[in-house]
Image (cartoon, rainbow, N blue to C red):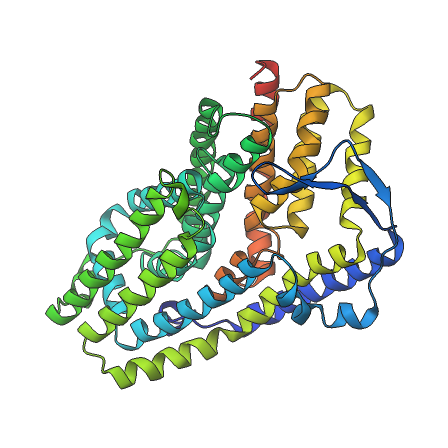
Length: 467
């Protein structure tokens, strides 16, 4: 990958075509399932907080359903008008902001300058930097539930990894994979653990010790996996070459300082959302506004004219449009299943299977149920409202604590966010890194398998210790 593509934001042609083909095949398979699986639904009620949850007393019943072919064909467009898809529109707007601002930062030379400065400062301790960056992103995911909000940082980390003698896969592991792992560990994740515990009647963020232990073990696994691969493909960095390449520039130093300060304020605001509840629904807006402000101010301070800023931003928005198509197609899979009313049928069948299982298998099965449902419903909060009223009572019938069930839910929701091609943030990140989905899958499946084994052992240990 050339340096111009490393620094700016540009969806790679190969990665785009691969992702589109994979998603289209999944769309076809989903439509075929609507012709085979009978339609059904659970009764739903509104809880005391105004949230719609499954009514376990009413239970499940078969209903008339199905989706016309024309509606499936237009589902990537119709999904924009579906109820509850305001977050989808927000993600798309968020992505366009990223595309426009990054292109401006690249055109004014600030991205290249920041990367050269970081390389010059950390080339001798690059593996320490790798460990710190992974910890930082895991903490963002685990403490405040950041995921999509971290996408603007992915191209910077990918470009930094390449500058430090590694490749784009190491950069993605340090950023997107790390934030997904942190999100799953969920020490104080308000969007999965917080919502799920409230629905289960548990004190919010209770049971931290097991999730904290999980965070540490998962961090060590990810760090070891990434560092081992990085050492296999690393290229030597010449200290002389680094020092000769980097020349300090006062104007770009001002732009860099401005960008870091404003974006840092945004990150602090996101971190504070863990303690200020009303900020939790505004994190994406906060990051978008702060990133937009940081990019505009830094570009102007770095010597770019207002006219050049507008022109380069529009060019960046256009270059990122292919990612919008990927997002809409991926989101249409859930839309198709909901319109055909087969999503509840699949869930009902899965819950029914658990009745004949031994106790130790049930907790792993709950983990797998959430993993499967996350393919169709990437939103952690939406899945919590759908699954927790079913899986917590089922687990308790087998003598499994609600607290351990929440951990299984968090595991099932988080890790697959960085594996499934139906997750918009993953598709965007791969496109920005110019890595195809097939490349990512071939590289990351080994970690996912190791992580599945580790987290399954954590759940079984928690069951044995009656946590």
